[in-house]
Figure 1 (cartoon, rainbow, N blue to C red):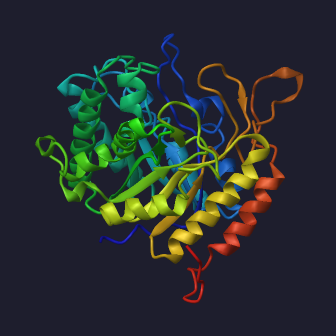
Figure 2 (cartoon, rainbow, N blue to C red; figure 1 turned 90 degrees about the vertical axis):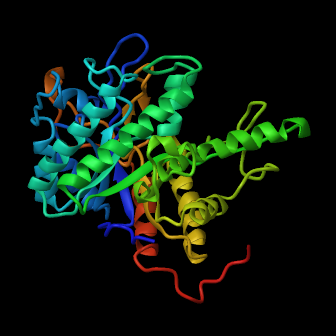
Length: 387
């Protein structure tokens, strides 16, 4: 197994960087909405002061390539320089549900355009840092294929074309990986998707539930060449596996969420172990978090489970608090209180010119301090647990 990249901290922060168009045509840009793109320098410094020295952040393809083949890096370079100045290690998302309007996602040109954009981005990022560049090329291939291609809730807003979209996103990931490696051979990659569990109340639905549960592995299986090898996959396209896990990631096939203590609820450490035994690749919790008062207890729970998995030899190499800033909800702009930090504070007289200071959610900061100390050292050999 290729060793994991040298992450600067075990605990990470993740900046919500979704850029999809809603079905009403509105283009989301969460880096702009949270003012992180304007205040990356102070945001990185704030996170470093709480021990978070690695982050997930985004390159917004629709801004970089406003016209076919013409790149504008003014939305990228200041963020890369802020990271370099503060000593922040960034793993860059290149396609977080959004793409330029001039590219048809269903056509072969989407694959070609994304590969060229990815290679050009890698060159720019590498020119701004001495770190080995790390990329998440397309965020949540399986989830996006379902959410946008199967049930039409976000663009491309189609129904019944989830598998077709998954194939297209896998092709684009393979092409972009090759294009980046051609210019930066040492680049590393994190491929993310939700980690889920699905079970059934009724025995006659058990097979349906298991089939749905196993579908979480399709994108990784396609990339590795184990499924649909005609797409061009091979083991070389699986580097680090990123697992996005929230408190709604376990449910009944008939409807309704599984709760801790319910029959059929799986411990997170068991789910992590299953993924590792399947792929033998380093893992990271690429997204996890909760809203409101649940923020601290949820992080404590996930950290406990990750600690148990690591004690069993599962190489979980990072845990990303996501989103690390409060953000406006995708559908209705409601204030989602998920972050270690809140909204940037406006200046007097109502002028919407954001200052760099943000309110701190102290309970989450306290928990991060506890977990930072806990994960500063690997589990000792005598850290034994009953399973």
